[in-house]
Length: 471
Image (cartoon, rainbow, N blue to C red; front, side):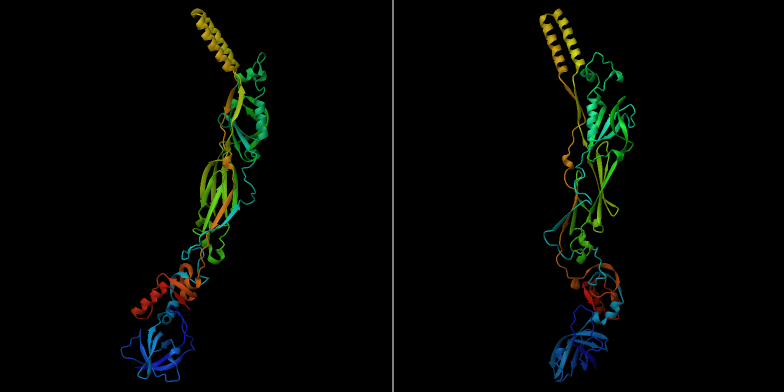
């Protein structure tokens, strides 16, 4: 059987759909050798001395409507004989191009999705480090003269038996000074004609009406959470002005951090802004240090840290969010409990002690001298203890140390090795009509309907699923 074959000199990959140009090639008559098949024909050519068969490495047989790779030339019976192998990708290029398939990777820049994590390439050891402070923040926001929230027993209380006032440091000092002087007077229903100030304070210690004092590390907080008022204590009115807290008082402070982008974002895609290529760590004292979920932050430009403070207890809640998604919520003690004390002498106790000594002495007379001395000594001891100044303490001392440190967002960038999208493609993971793409690609399911043999169908599928070039 003889027919015409067109021979070509063509440079192409084995896994490519590339075809020769329409006007290329040289036509020769050939003889199909006995026992040949369509997939692997063997052809004999009478090329003569004018042509060198080694120049030809590719063929098209119109009778079979297929393209072929020439595997080998050999000389036999004065004829050059070629063994061929069908090129299924070039032969069925039209059917492949017209198919809409799920493309997992592609070299076409318009196709790949930079948000899909590409784990084909490992990362280098070591990392780049970037640290960012909160926008507009030059120092720790808790490094301020604090506002003191003082809970005071008052007849006009609005929260149980207490009123809460926000005071500056100067106002708190003024209040303490006031309470340690002459608050107990005849005007306040105490007869002090024959009593010293010390005795007055022994009768009534004004400091006992202050039930709590919390230092909130924010300056001049009063106008934000209360209305200006004179501080009331028990049934008395002081000369100190502060800010009286209303119901459900709270304070909010928001901090925004810019998210730096991975150095390889433009060249590799947005996926490098997520783990394992990017790690983000947020530091907010006193809440601590914690990691940020980069699967959320990779598509954002900022992270917001909202601190909500309960001024009465000093407890605070940190809510970290990004793109409207809450990443973390942590509670901590932001306010520092402050200890307030007064020092008085128990003169009433002293009198009571002396009375006890006298009573003991009288009893001792009846029971003998030893009894008198023992009773007297007991009474004197009580009196001496009563004369020693005693401290009355309100609250406990907290810790300002946990408030120290910078508010910052730390970035660790791990650099992936150089990629090769021309030969490996990049993640696509979507349906595409193959003819709309170019270059290397991998298909998830390469079952393309072709008018070929089962061997050709299997070969096409294997090429598409292992990676091929659409050219």
